[in-house]
Length: 352
Image 1 (cartoon, rainbow, N blue to C red):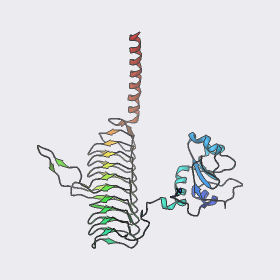
Image 2 (cartoon, rainbow, N blue to C red):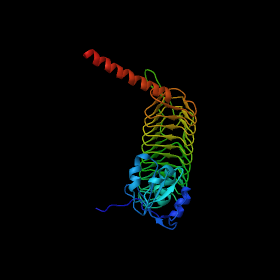
Image 3 (spheres, one colour):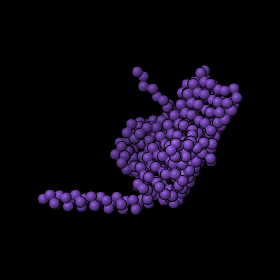
Image 4 (cartoon, helix red, strand yellow):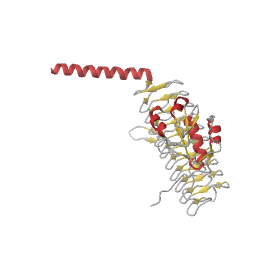
């Protein structure tokens, strides 16, 4: 069986182009016109590859790499072997990410899985839907009445776009995704199986639980990315909002009326309960749980597996269950470890 290459490089980049993009200076003697055609890890890179390194753990791999050039921090430059062009950058990882996008532009946004343009056979587009020129719809997708989709957007196989949904330009709607009661901005990526706009979980509890109608919407602003099998419930009486540039991992639950600010990062397994607000630049680690009606301040960071049950001040770092400032959390962990160690020694002494 052939070994397919899913992301072939474009035309490659010269060392001069790479150095300019990374804000680096070419070492004396380096050929500015030498062209690299791809990127690879330090261990497997060859003379035609670009690599990067910014972690002391990989110092040994750097010392023996065969990469044509390597983006790295200044503290590691002396370990770069003579055959590899050393490109010192203030932020090697970010520079590498930008260059990787130039080498493999098709990897930046999921495209059609059918390899076609326009509306494919087997797609179902309602006559009252409006698609701008250049929209791609894969087989099995369903687009309802009154839906509007902007140019350059790709709708994957078996995706369902409900009545009246608005999707901006240059978006990618993954296979099997469902969208209802939603307004989606430009350059939004929804990975396969994402669910946006379904009922929020609202019931007036009693001997029988009375369903509370959920009459809000989901609003996703520009440049948001939402991972596979993540769910975003529509609002109950106000909108659920995902702010510009926010990145959300796979398997995240965002409940009704949640407002997430701009450029937040939410890692896999997070659950955010209803009517909570995350201000701009908040980071939630994996499997964080946030109870309802809270506010997490601008730039706050919550450690993975923490449970947040009260408001978090801007710019703070919290962790633990219940979550608290990290210094207090670390003191608690240290104290418990010492108590456990002392208890173990006392038990061993009693046994003697």
